[in-house]
Length: 415
Image 1: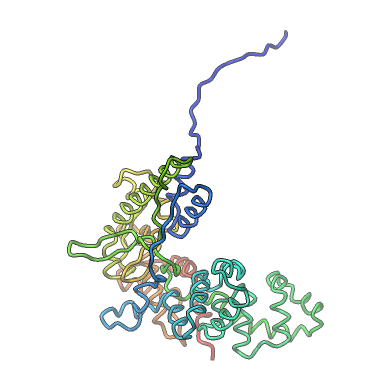
Image 2 (image 1 turned 90 degrees about the vertical axis):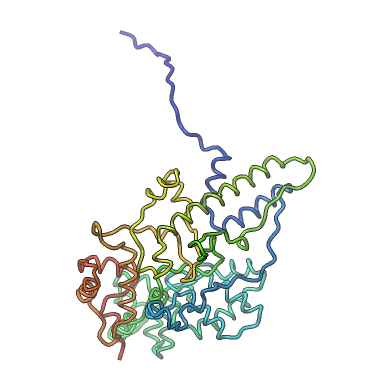
């Protein structure tokens, strides 16, 4: 029996990601800085797109002194400053020149939550239009004055080296370990001894000192604070309640050039996408912060459970749209600059407080503990239970890890 070839016709449907749709999604999920870069690139390719940057001074968070000991807000003072506020204070205390202050702010903006710099110095120098040695000079001053030691390190080895130098322990065995952190991570200290030509006992002693250093000196600060940069939204309390507005100084204004040259249609389409992005961002931000009014007025310890599905249903949007809008979006409030995404938090127990609120309370407990007698996970769980938030010890350990807080034995003050 011979086989025969058949030709059949099937009708299917699928979503094609057109160039316009891809651009719309990119604009929707872009933060102010990312959207500004995209508009600059688009204007460079299409002369019909005209950009005009607002004439404003470098943005400084209006909450930079929010943790300066305001007696009316003891809960913030107890929690300690955010990494952002701490670094702003450091830059201000150095009394740098205007040019060096600009470099210092760029370095501060590049800080990761760990306290390390997340960008190369060459990239920062190129962005500012200055020489790399100028950036290195300012970085050296920041590293020398930063507290805790290790802030503004470019990598783990430099972070640990700064702490070893500050402790007067940067001896040959310590240098050998820091030069071979990859081998140390594998536990191959015997190989390090052979390669460095040193006694194993000396290296083990240096390793004991090394373990007492903090590999993430920025992790002990306020966990919800967003990086230093212009926020996308600004929340202010008015006579009728909290009002959310766009930060107009964070984005250039866009217009279409006069005439009938090629590219005008694309320019008008781009403006329409930006207007849609701004309207969606405003409505999503307003709904989120309306639900989290207690957090705006009392602090992050008052966060209530909230999901993206709830916001999507209330606004008639798809949940994926909410996810794109809040990705990388920051809002400036009197209590700090927050990521919108961090305000979405579920309750570990039905009817109980939000997980974000519990993490905030946990961070405050650790900030207020006696450094000579730090609280164990069991003690932290008991303290949270006394405040009306029963929580298991393993959940405390999980949240402590999320906050980059070390266990009690590592938080104990060194004698």
